[in-house]
Amino acid sequence: MGGNTRYQNKLMKQMWFWLGYMYDPALLEIEDVADTVMADYFMAVQQPYQHVHAGFLLGSIGVHKAAAKQYEQMEGSQLYGHGRWASPRPYMQFFQHRYLRCGAGLHCTGDGYKIDHAIWANTMRMFLYLMDNEISQTNEVIGRTATIREVLFMKKWFGTLLEPWRDHSKTMLLIEGLLQKLNEADEIGEAEGYPFTL
Image 1: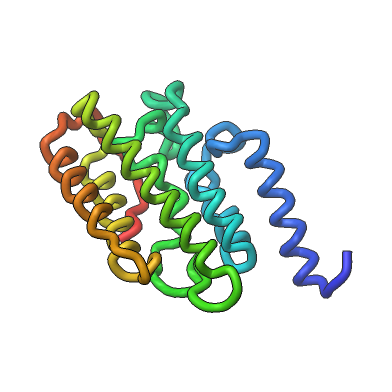
Image 2: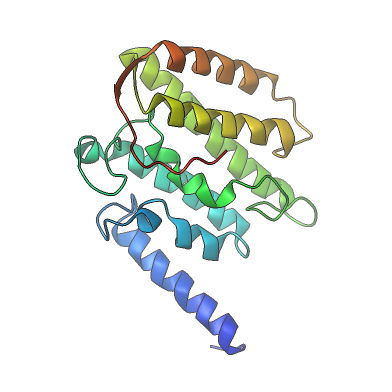
């Protein structure tokens, strides 16, 4: 393993986090600690170096969190509310990307930057469509305020930084309709201790 000690340490941390993710892709079983559940350190060591990988993780972790039905009523450090799209839990890994700027998970110039944008944009659109589909069927939300904040966070990315060369009017209509559904839905639980990203 070449490079200086700092570089080697970075690689070792990345490998360690990836092993944990492969064993527990929802980040719910390894450790009942907020930093682990929200992928704080994992995304922190990933996003400055592998932007495409960070985009992949953003989507994959969210899908696994939304599928973790057994954690919907689970007590623990930010565990309650998993297993649903209409909840802030599938979006916890946004925490490291709360700053809207080039470099915060995205390349904005140079080779391949459009690929970065496509992965991030498609991931966020997927989140929005899946949440909209779920809430249309259940009319239920866990942690209304925190979930709305996450939707507004995605709206801000589309309106400020993400794929600036594209027309996002269709996505914006989806977001406005989703926000209305979230405001009118039955709140069946609160997401305690959630770290807001706005």
